[in-house]
Length: 86
Image 1 (cartoon, rainbow, N blue to C red):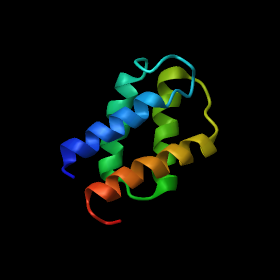
Image 2: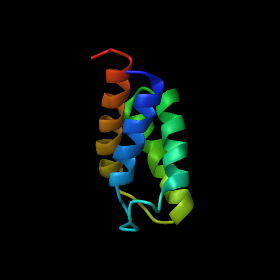
Image 3: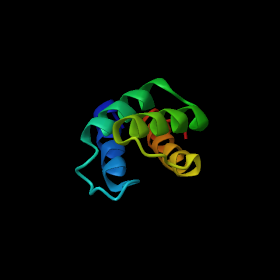
Image 4: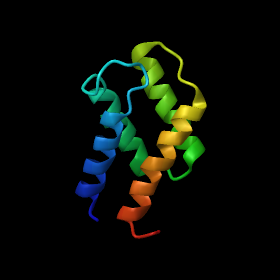
């Protein structure tokens, strides 16, 4: 899987994730930032903290870290599949 496909799958997953019940098109800027961090980070806890920070900065609302960890594992699975690490 190439980087383009990885980004596409990650974006689709994040569009489905709606932590504040705003609708799937509400998080376009946050999704771009999270995908950029996905390329940079490899540890689920680090990615989860960054996801939480990105969404909380935009919405000024708290997300339980457990929810961020769940989505970070799914995103990293996409990344590892793309890099043929799995």
